[in-house]
Image (tube, rainbow, N blue to C red; front, side, top):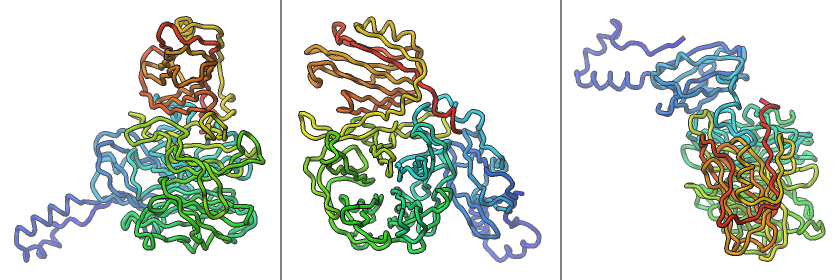
Length: 560
């Protein structure tokens, strides 16, 4: 039922208005009707509310009230005339209750909101025209920073900054999205792990397993550390949430916030806690972005923290981990990086990080916002000790789709000694072989011969492996559907056989040169051309020693 405010021109109210000058009455009526609100009451019997959205509608805050109290609020571009797409709200927690939806302005589509056992568009979910087929994307809305990926109770868990209400994010209303996987490849999206509370919107952070019940929330509880952002004051404080039911639900720690350093540092830039156990001195470590770099805190109970040191030069979203050098477990170094692909290699004594290299980069690829690869985080508690990262593919839009942004394909990090010194290298995880479908293999090809063979492969998601030699003074270009993926010159490559690995999906290509010595992220358009993969070079160089192309299965056939 849609209800409106009492009509001010009704007989019972007319005498009231006789005492006011006409100009005041006109002003009141204008302000009244321009802000006319609507309410919709319904008893919740199904898990989802489907809400129609328009690209051009003004963002307004919708509220879910129960017994006169606001239980949730979120901004939406509620369609007025044209419906461009639908979003959904999981209302399982209200099942059996009567809720009241409140929207502050009149909209023709308000009464089109409905509840259902499935989301609007479920029949075409993951089959949409521009949906990536082996990179993770959300069902609806916006996604960005990866948060706290971890292997927990025999499953991989990935969290992220989620804005499920539209395609243009609002930092004051971010959630923690949540998905699980059994193989790092096929992901099942779950209801959000965290929503807003009295301290604000849950921004980025990390996760850990409290194996010894140090926090008092339960043995082997999954603990989330995150930044709470107050959309009114801009304040950023560090908080804890935890789960004791296998990550199905999370509760906030009643003592939040555990760190509030805004006033002390004279800045609101205090965010993105990365927390882990440091075994040599048996305490917890938090790496926290503060003001102009990374602060290192320590704690014995996860609740009280002491700042020990500060390292300048990196910006937000820290990740910090130890890796063996050239596979030697008796020789390890620490890697510290921020939101972008910039990093340092050095030593850590439990309180202070000491760099041994200048600032380096492990990935290439820029967009209007900067690095396309952003806010990457590595999985904790890996069963095989690999260091696997998933990162946000920043700025990858999908025109006409009910979702935007993408997560890059999982990569495995290692530390390798190179001619330029010790470097962090990245390669796609071995599990990618699970997605191989039809395979093509050719050997000893010139460029024209290679292009002739490639002509039989229709444009689609692909995994490409190329072994090639490039003569001095020559160059090698790779294209897909008219988009240039990479240009390589002999000046930047060893004068020997080189290797290139390319992952091609909708709107995104990831290129790995010589076993991860270079990692390039490339944004490509969702072009509808007949040309698929092809090469270009000067004077038919390079020479292709081996070319393998794999057509890729969809990761969405297994989990929806």
